[in-house]
Length: 486
Image (cartoon, rainbow, N blue to C red; front, side, top):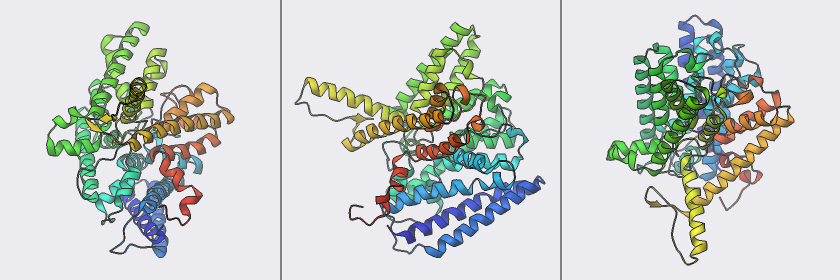
């Protein structure tokens, strides 16, 4: 592995992190938030200092290309480094202790949206803006956004795009990787802008509209009120949010293709159609269950069902009502949608619908081959045959998620959390949702978790955002050894 290239690009990332902190710093100064301004100024200084240190040991040359090990190292270490630097405003400003600052930063950049802050409304607006920005930068991907605006990484940049893009398939829409990243980033900015305008028209003030738009499109879910969306009680806003959360659950690569080939591309996409079918069925079941079991008003039940199915399936985690009080069947369907997540290539977390489709078709194929041993066929997705490596990769990822869910739950039970609460927190953390059920309920925060569980949550959020194997490879001893196999 070329450590010079890795160090040089990490230096660019830390510099970009410092630049991202300038708007909150200016906002704090403009709002006379002296403690917040000082915290951001210190954070910017530390980012610049880290850049100088990294550039001392590395740098990019014109003919440099990023290989697979460099791509993994830049993605994994870049996420880790930015998340650590991102905690400084919380800690330096005296708003959180060191561990809670770490959790808040990891939760923000990973798009989990789980907070340890009991009362976000007492925070200065500059810190609220930084929380939302951390969601937004982490949503599409720190390195993908950086690739869109930074100099060309070289032919090996595909390894970085593969390492950070979520889902079993990584489609390229354009020959050059940087053009790919720029197209994805352009769609990301466009959707964020449209979302902010929509929220403003629904009655939100400009600051609230911008913050919620960033966290909606990033499917992060950070809000500027303790009750997030429930503070507004605005039906139009909830429907608008549900629409943009569903849109953000679709593949951004699919939207790039749709811009070139027409909107029909979206509705021909098997994964997105399946996702829409799943959330439609789930919303109908939840609405009927609320009407039948709780005697809820039909319009309220439909509104609540649509919003929370969209929120949890997209792993955004916004809360309009306390869904932890819903009947058991409703909670079961909400947890199912939370577990599945959105589409591959979206900002949503979870397993991804594409993997579920591939695994289902793989099981059907195996059964058919048992009945007809000479049958030769392939698993397909959107009419295209899928390589066996991708199908087996989906199976390996499913197994890894299950094992990590069990492991994290076991850690929390060891730390004193009961079984049901541990399972709920584990699923919501690994799916990057944030709110769940029980101790991690709709109106609760991660502040209730013991210290060991909070620290482990950071690691599991890191694993889930980079889809496990990049992080496991990064911390494998053989990764840092010289080998001809890389």
